[in-house]
Amino acid sequence: EGFGILAYAVAIGGIIAVNVRFGMDMTLLRDLYHYQDKSKEILVASVILRIIILIICFSTLLILNIYSVVTLSLGQLLVAFSSALIALQLNNYYDFLGNLKKSSIQNMVYKLLYFASIWIASYYVELSIDIIGWLMTVTLIGYLVVNYNSVNFVSIVIDSESNIKDILFLLKENHIVWITALLVSMAYSVNQLIVEDILGESDLGIFAASYLFVAAILMFYKQISRAFKPLMAMHTHGGLNDGFMKKYLFGMMGFGGAISITLFFLSDFMILTLLGIEYMSSAEVLKYFSIFVFMKSVEIVLTQYFQFSRSYKISLLTNATFGISTVVLSIYLLPIYGVIGGAIAMSLGLAIGNAIALLPYKEVV
Image 1 (cartoon, rainbow, N blue to C red):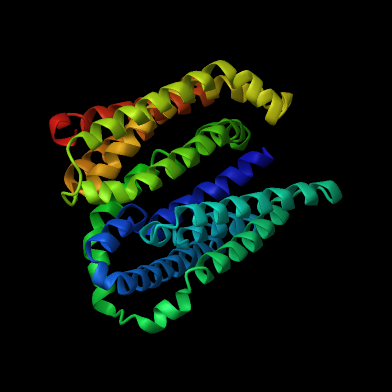
Image 2: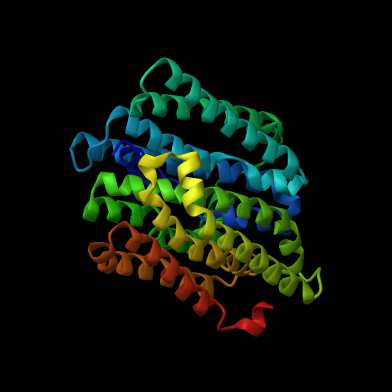
């Protein structure tokens, strides 16, 4: 149940993070490449826009909490805030500068410090959502300070001539991508809220425990896709030959297939070894998530292509299909199959979304 309480706060923070990013996590590198003469102005405008959205969204959450529309403890609010604050990181700018390795190391060190602080705290005191919330917030702020200082962000702000026009440009360029991201969040954060509403916090904890392994794999996928972002930017700008997409797509499918097979057969061992026998009920859920892991290896390439080529309509359609299908299937399957129904819903929802995306196959590859 305690894990469910944490997962609930993370899910709310995840929804806020989607709004804060405003689709720029998918498109900012493209815009930096395509408008290199205004790269500093675009970067500064993106940070200002994200901060404004964060203030609006979190203030709204606080007001809803005060009036008991939602009920979150201080620790849950800190967890939600940290889960949203991560959207301010400058990964796309590091990629633009060709410093993928540097930002990856920063991210790894941040996560190691966070988990180390959790482990040390658990040795001396009984962990609570409040302690976890404070540790998440402090370690994340430290990471962001390093993340911004390493690119001399203050100097960039001083040197740039960013104005309201740049912010309006980002709003215009990204509003469809933002809506698309909100629809995708239905399959992730909103879906977890549905699990909590239908099955309760204890079952949400089981669901979230199995999804931890999926999230770790998706983080690895994300690093691979980040490495290919500059190439995708060049490909969609006419700089690479047509064979690039085939190699990228089928390479990711092969990699995803190998991981999903491993996940399916080793789910019991992974849950028992890393989480303990009390979470063994998560192992069966993880088996069904192995299908999702494979489907995600396809989706991540297609989505990246659609975003960089500004094919917003097909991106909106496929992600809307994914998000809505997942929610509808979850509402139907959760009462029948329990937590496993949530994993089945996400896997089937993504499969349907991928099928829609692959209709214009010749255009993609």
